[in-house]
Length: 221
Image (tube, rainbow, N blue to C red):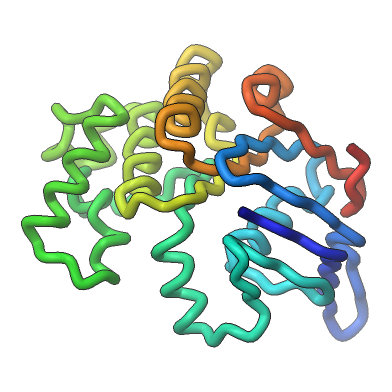
């Protein structure tokens, strides 16, 4: 499903050159749940952004579902992301002025979906994460765990084949973190969604199929 070949990422300023990723070769199978671990600053989020086509590598090739991505225009990349990928962030990134249902609908606004279809799909996504009774609430009325459930619903509303999760349990206590992980594990198991998750938590990583470790931008496991 995801193929990274000899990926390198260099950030340059006028005076400094920083090697963020070096010689990353990674194959992720369809339906796999992969976790990525490593110390802060080792390149985990950079790797996730490259897989998510939010950033381009300095060298190397990315293929997602056999689609080479290096020659796609910005518009083509945006369309590909919207159809194939769902994103979950540590800080939720919900819009406080929008109700829960409207937050979940957002990815569908970039498709030719009717308002009734958007509401139906958003309601179904919220039901999967156990928040059917919160559709009219605003994010400020929710707990951290509930906000992350809304973020997961938003990530899955477009029925993506791949979910990229950056520290999805990082801002939560252990009990709520376990609940969020259970939702992700269930999505992977029942719907075959491919998931790549960055985490600092060994306990959470052990619930996934495979673990990749990064250190100073290089893959060490």
